[in-house]
Length: 294
Image (cartoon, rainbow, N blue to C red; front, side):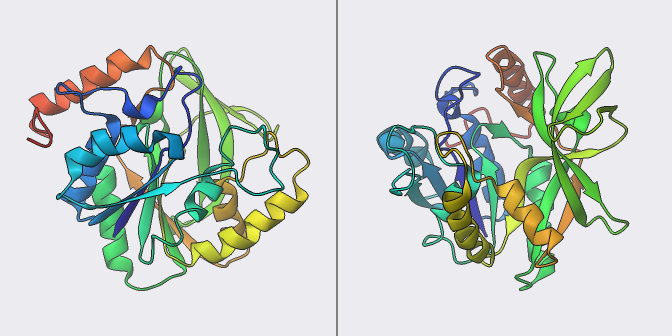
């Protein structure tokens, strides 16, 4: 099993390259904890998708720390298609990022965001799914978090709200803005449909299991994206859209895997202290050693 880490985006709301913000007691990054959890769950390779200009800082920090513990590959996400405006700096989206890794991934893999802390249980849950599903290339898995376990009191967040059928297979993803109103979570779908208060819905944090079959759809879809987008300065080719299209067309099934894991991240700079406190508590409880790679 391979872990693909999406790390080419810059954290505009946090104000920097939050993927390499120290959060552990010995300067560990969020990515360090994700890789540690992935190794524990049985993953044997990690692929970093990064901007080329960040290669040295990634290799000299996290790359050096995990050398010899897991196989490592680096992939650069570039806006190098002639149809993309030369002045565009922002990456073209998560779908394009994963497509950049197609020559490095030939086995079942999961994707995660570099700046999200997913929790040990989430990695164990999705690894178990991959092992049990066998060689079915048309079966994906998506870790569904309880909405309240992914929130911050420091502002609104965007989440993919999941709809599932009676067998827990994904039927729809609705990108939404979530915010606390008192002790309730107000969900505002970004497609303009009616807002509502959360009532047990699960959300996606972009921890998804794919097979190499995904790359066929990514290649076709990316050509459509480049040829038909009205504004390539701002448009993004996003993996939830690709996944939903495959599910809607019945090309694949996607099992939603419920987890009680607590998500943590740095959406806002004020989230950093809370994340550090949470990791310290996990160390105190024996989940992680005080020095991950000693």
